[in-house]
Image 1: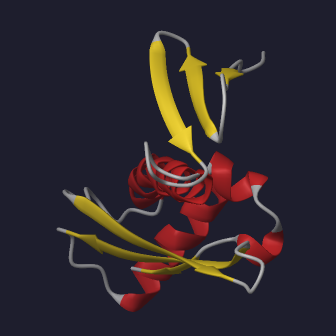
Image 2: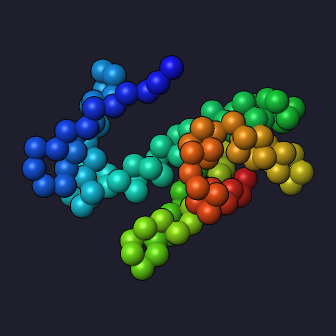
Length: 126
């Protein structure tokens, strides 16, 4: 199995991405759409949502309800990602040990987490 995306740029730094029947515009300058790093952070957090839900079920934490992830991507002097942090809020009231178990399992399940280099794996507070 594979995933396929077609990316087209007619000029400048704006790229249109055809993902199945969806079209997503990414602008490295951030003027005509999210920039590349914002898109990566959004994909990471979006992948982390189902990982949290499944992780919570598998660790007997129950339903999480609404999940809000505030993502911070710190940049270095070269404007490259230096670190990623997720501040996660849910409707569920989890104690510290349960939250840690859910995060540990979510880290194992999230495909984007698995794809980023270890130094950029999100530091998660739940």
